[in-house]
Amino acid sequence: MLTGTLAMLVRALRLDARLLRAHLFRAGFALLVFASLVYTILVGGLVGAPGLKMFSTMTYLNVVLISLAGVSFFATAITEEKEEDTLGLLMLAGINPLGILFGKSTSRLVSTLLLLLVQIPFTLLAITLGGVTVNQVLAAYTSLAAYLLLVANMGVLASVICRRGGSASFITLVLIGLYLASPILVWVTQIGLQNSGLVQPKSNVDLQIQAFHDGLQQASILTQVSEIMRTGFAGHIFGFQVLTCTGTAAVLFFLAWIGFRRFTRHSGDQRGPRADLTARFIGLGRHRRSRPVRYPLAWKEFHFVAGGLQTQILKFVVYGILVLLTLWAADRYYSYTLADSGKFVALGMLGLLTFEACLYASRVFHDEWREHTLPLLAMVPGKPSRMIAGKLLGCLPALLPALFWLFAGCVIWPAGLSELGLCLILPSRWFYGLLLLLFMTLTAFFSMIVRWGSLPLAATVMAAGMFFSSCCGSPVIMMLSTAQQQGTSFEMGFLMVDAVVLTLILGLQYDVRRRIEIASAQ
Image (cartoon, rainbow, N blue to C red; front, top):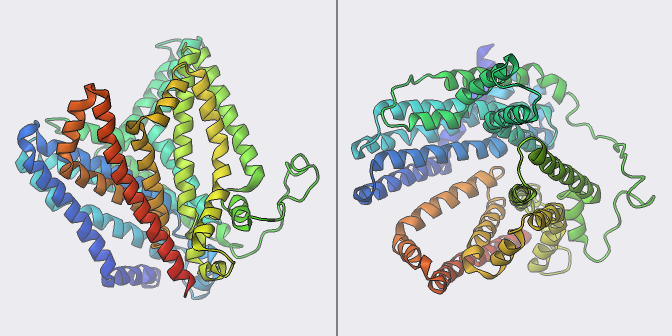
């Protein structure tokens, strides 16, 4: 029985062991750690405890990459079989739900754990640079492995429940966000209740909330990593965070197992039209989706990738409610001025806008590339550049709700409009926008190479590129820092950096267009 259950897992591990690209990817990751070690050795005399700084940077980078892997890599473990209608074939072959979960999710977990293992020998060398002990290294990677178990099983449970990979990724993102932000959310709630007078300080309710906050904080990977990075850390390798994450991961995997048949029983059935409560209020009785007239590709992207008009109206209303709640809570419970509240609104909407833009960049070519429909799409009269422009044009209206409330936050914030104007005229502010555009282009590029995981792969490449550029461009950074007091020289220096980033963006966009032309000719 156990042999049959582990059949898919053994096959997946053997296939991964024979793939050259998997070994090359792990070797590249190890080389990245080695390069960071060499750079730390070269500049070790300029900073105190260089080994600790290098180790801290690599650990926090692993936290980010594991979180991104959970959103894209683990959240699609089962949904990709649902979307291709092959899950029923696996069950007809006699593979039980536990075997499918082992084969589809545990194999990915093992592959990701290997990426952590290849770092340990190089990270141990950081001990010779000072500031790091063996206990810190082992505790950090044990905590990262436990966090990886938790994130992976969050993705697996969402993948079992949801029909589509996009929905599973969104649920996984929400779960990871709640896990990371729960201590802050509980603390903010506690402060608000105290300021409003609903809860008296040091009362029983306040002490219970404080105990709950302390438990969440001890279970957080961010708190655990910050504790490990302290000089003289002498804590246990298997701390509270490791035990909590491992136990929660086991519970999530058990829930995915017992609910597998229930949520996958009708995975291949086509759902009928959904009852749309907003249909009678939107379009004045017209059909739910208008007909494509002059811009069919833009129409397709707007309705099938961005969600259509109903989704945009819903986003506009939800974002508006969030803005009003932020303004009300800031004034009612935290005694913030309206100007400070506007700043929080502007920054929050900027984060949402960035997230939405990156999400649409990962989807703009993904479906056509995965389903091999680019040759059919190329039969539509027009150049590839026109096709790309049409797809981008269809996604742009989806950013309007966040843009509107971002502008509203800038209007409420007294310095908001001036800051917005500086972002339009100063090259030093253009740099951040160009970095975002480079990341989006890189995400779209990788969406045409890998089946899933374009976002974490693009984030990894961006992190590696920023590391090497910081190593090679240290003289430029020092000159820019020196010229910061001289406004013109500072902006001219950033203008040169912007030109380099813009060149990279144009090169990637040319390669994306070339890949579309190649795929269209197949």
